Image 1 (spheres, rainbow, N blue to C red):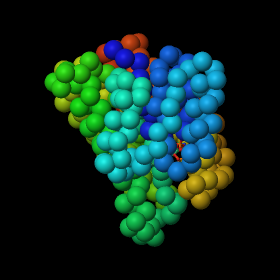
Image 2: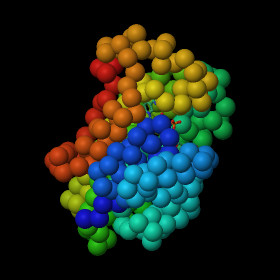
Image 3: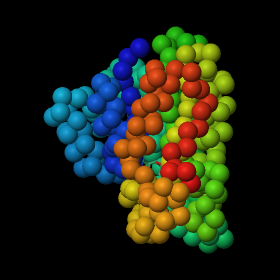
Length: 248
Ligand code: NAP
């Protein structure tokens, strides 16, 4: 099996930690991004200067046509992927459901849910033995919001993550006999820019005291769980949703 990994939203935050950990585990990494080319280019340069192989590829994963181009690009430039990490995600601004714009909900579900479905669809077409592929692994970065529901913050985001949990369970059963394992990691609060982009830069400090371990997690701690799930060490994990939330 090839060692080629696609990380959606692999340019910063949790995705950047996954991209770096993948390169350190000898994967050639396709670092997908949407808007911030500089972040993606800097990360790719850092990985390549350290002897790894990485390539930045721009694509809005909420657009199925761009997802197809992304997968074609990875296949032609790095080879057939053996791992897809559905990591790209966004929350929209923190508010109640009766205050949020329809456009925000549509964008969040478009990226978090439809994006993961579109990418997983393309991955199955390339990896499944049913289509002549050599198998592989899909890991989705979900959220414990899927079971907490995020009241008063972003109920639509929680719904978008509950949907990818359902996708994980269903797709694992659908393609488990075709050489593909499908799993998810559900982070709790992780210290990245996503909270400031959601309008509350201090969210980590506000919530940390209520976490059983009394601290936020790091992007590296999520990357460790993702790399484990796609490794042979997790060879009998399929349809697993692994909480990585400090016990929250
Ligand atoms: P982040 O720091 O805001 O990074 C988001 C990444 O997604 C960036 O690389 C961004 O690329 C990319 N992205 C956004 N929209 C995209 C699109 N339409 N197409 C392709 N890429 C897109 O977020 P993060 O905290 O690392 O979150 C990563 C994942 O973890 C998300 O799925 C999030 O829901 C999940 N998660 C995070 C936390 C947390 O507390 N941080 C907790 C639970 C779950 P550009 O820079 O180019 O826009």
